[in-house]
Image (tube, rainbow, N blue to C red):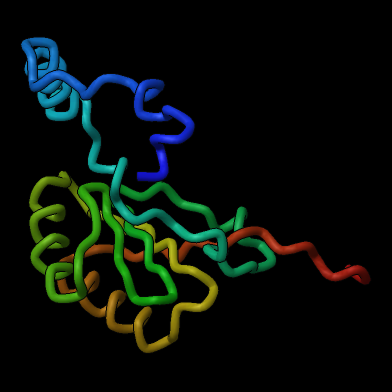
Length: 147
């Protein structure tokens, strides 16, 4: 073997011991740590760096308070406060949220600038059918130079 001329085998560390009590103590403490202190956001997909609201002049003037909100990415993914939902799950989620809200529920839709008009129309239709007043989120754009 190649290690014999340099006596490298003598300089190696000893083989590790088998699973002793400390291994089980560490594993036993890690499991409750992740169960109790874990978060649904740790391994959940996040918003990419390309998420950008559309810009509208006068967006701040038309701002209104909302009772619920959702975020729509250009890929069609929909995120609510409880996590990601599909378009099929949006209707039942909105109905459940409308029942929990006293008075007129309002929905703030934070859609990325690249979301298609067809996707927005579908979301707005489902929200109106569930009894929501829909608010479309936008960033304030710089006013034109001449005004």
